[in-house]
Length: 253
Ligand SMILES: [Fe+2]
Image (cartoon, rainbow, N blue to C red):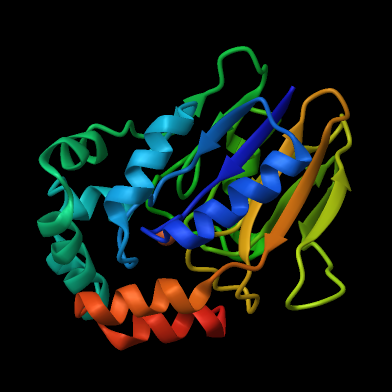
């Protein structure tokens, strides 16, 4: 089975459509969506509609919680709070309810053994796993051999194999073409894998990020896909959302 893993779409329909086209070409059977479906971007309804259509496994992100009123958006920085309120005002009532009802991770995958989905960390849905030190506790405490996580908007991950701790970062040849990086996994190791952010990458690469997990080959294919970033930016400006939310899409930070 091939599973498309997407995370942190953040209301960016252009990035989502481009990623899905790339994933269609690479083939997949089902979808894991790791949350932050909305927040920041100007197309929350389009992204929620497409996410609902794709189905699969979902976990909620911190922006899904803030936009739908589960948590207080005042706790965010000013720009993120403005975006959360704008998203709340612009989601249809049905889509707002769908976002509000997204489940808290970890969610175990039915039919795929030893795999779980979280937004931040298996130990805390709001925690950031940025450097390998952050992965020690979650990797030691969790029993799942493979945990998919998002939240940091950084594609790659961490692994432990016996005494050896590893940081995984895909390597690409360009910064403007559609690319893939295949990472073969070892059966003996335990992994935390981040597909990267579809709609607001922060790892220095502006291209939309996602990943495909091949359960038979036991490999992860990381994807980076160029998309119509100018269109996504124009919608952000037109919506009156903070300019920084548009400019950071080309910065990839
Ligand atoms: Fe996010």
